[in-house]
Image 1 (cartoon, rainbow, N blue to C red):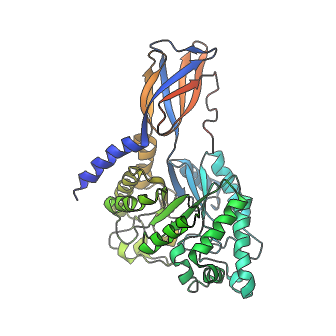
Image 2 (image 1 turned 60 degrees about the vertical axis):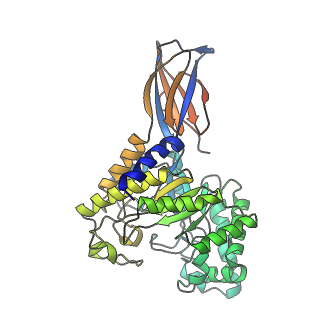
Image 3 (image 1 turned 90 degrees about the vertical axis):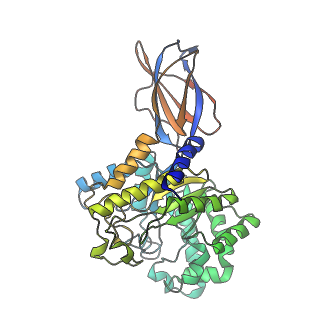
Length: 436
């Protein structure tokens, strides 16, 4: 289809689904309304939509300057973070989460989660049950491996209860059982043999709910296959809760078109469950190197970033984000890797280069999230109200007064029309919104 047609529709739909016209009534201390003509400034503080990133390399830099640069970039456009909890080392994670029985990398993840929450960044743990498992697990007697897996689920969710709100639970469930032997993931093989995919998911989700009743469970799948559709239907028919459907979109060897992404959203919206794009990545290597990318950890010169590849990555990123943000079923987009340093597959899929300098894709994303899709307005009060259309999320209103500025905080959500805001002489920088 013609390039402009999806873009025009996306622009219209972003306005329709991601914005809301509101009438805000600011109240002065003492219950008085603002005078006609009083100037007010409204600034959006955060998005309701989850714009996420895998914070690879966080806390692992050898020197303080590098770490500070990484953290500043992590904070930039994002309000949502993927934190890796692969039980064993994987294509994205260099070490086992539990290198020896009972010895975990909890302290590093704890510091990371604490930092994210201080930056008002919501956290997702990724994932709980998968075919990357520490080698010591396979060496355990057959009867005990299953309990080790369930112990891990309870431990990770319980120790971050109230702090990690989202969990990718059973990753790639429709084929995890079949491929577990290939990866020597014998705990997965045992539970899938005994319970089948539905049983594994049901039990995992029950353990998650017991360990943290407020946790939201995401079922993350690599491809939108018919097999996964049948599994999801079966789960829902049996009353098993799924809070979000997760899809990966790796776009490694060839581009992913906005039309194909929108088609996935259309076809899967019938379930009425929010869709998360959990692992979005496009490489910035040369066009010639791109088809050579394989799912193995091997450093290959053809994968290295280059100027033409970086320009292409920025274009692909912008098109994908525009398409996905325009679809009402999508609730979150997570880029799979902030930096090329310690990236998935050691490929150039980061938004930063290995030296942590920003690629064009980082600037493009920052421009979308912090300028194009963010509301800031100077408005004049009429009959005690200000009226405007804003992106959904948390806002601060500032009203200049004779003895200093007055501030108020409010949230715009879908369907909200009239919003009352109490103004107070709060100091600038007061915490806004709440992490719920």
